[in-house]
Image (cartoon, rainbow over the protein chains, first blue to last red):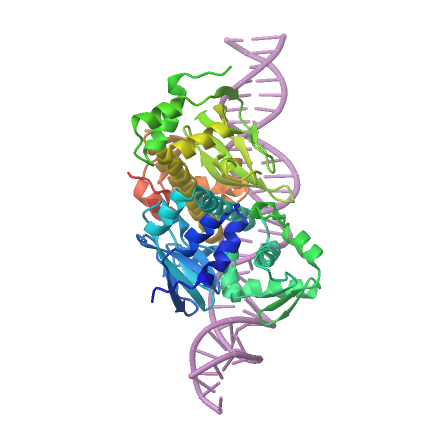
Length: 242
Length: 242
DNA sequence: CGTAGGTTTGACTGATCTCAAGTTTGGTGG
DNA sequence: CCACCAAACTTGAGATCAGTCAAACCTACG
């Protein structure tokens, strides 16, 4: 059960190395973390709202989203996670969760005891800083989403979401021109504050404008510059090197 | 110039004490921070987008907002700050700013060298944790705003903004029933993703519904329960004790 | 094959925006 | 203390983007 393959942490280490200069001891400390790996199907609630977490979830494969549910049942997605992302770093410092994390696709997740991670952050300050930096970058992404949902029209919002997804895919070594979206049009609607009907029409429009080509959930960005312009997409808020 | 009145930090200390158990040494270390106090008028850009900060701004009096500007010039406010709040903690860990901070009212600000704050966070881990916690809570507020702007109608959004403002006012010792808004209706529009015209109409509607009474920017919440219901306001996301 | 989840389409509705013109208010200088 | 001005607030009418509802169409998968 307590799997400790060296390489379950490889994606996470790659991510952290973008955030800080890790030395050998740092790497060893990460690889020594206890972890329990589990596979979960799509649309599984991994982390509940208003719960005390004892474990921290590390996404090994697949995609998840961070979401909150309004009183009338409406769902708002505020970010997507990709392999190598820690899903509830907040739990290191805040006892109770204030939102949900759900799988978008089938996924593999490593569960790490919070206490072990907290110790790691304290004893290896470089890692602690990297983790803090990671939460700050996600904060920056939230700010961009507030702007996206609050001040851009439907077409721009969707284009922006595509740009961010493609750009972040490059950070884990994928090509941005050809992306396979893990999420349904309904998920896109919940991420952009629209309805799935309207998302569908806008995707068709982007297709008609020759900036993307679609084959089900495979998106080919045929005119990256135009898509960025439509999206009003600037990469600064992602705080990524490349 | 380098003012070091013991009590310029009192509001900030009160805030940090809500986030961690500070001991005498912690307090002394905070009070020993170098700081330069400046007064600025309303609508002054304190922190620019995409700039390297060398100083951290601590709000002593007045109100500020965190905002991003869209490509078409549209402004989106993503949070308000009150006395005792640090305005750019991100700068401790991220070299470049990704948004702006502007005064909403006239304000007094203490400027603290980033390096001093970074040292403080490292040498006094309790304070470091409190600061991290503070940035995480603001992240939670951003998430709530994404939900607010993305999934609630105009009336609820405005009601929610009022609830949050009133609730946070209580955390610095004010009464929630009678609030004096520092922001114009145009600011409220930029915070809720609406136009000032529509904000005006919705405020009138809340007035007509007998949940608030208005005398210019003085708001009296006459039916707190109803306002919370309209706003779909749950306090959990603020992670406040009370 | 049959089915469920996802996607697409059409017709109609409505919340919010736009534009443009008043009105009120608070501050400032004479 | 009053007159004036700019900024903020208010009002109305018409336009529009996105939502709603309901049905049909795919397509992956058991």
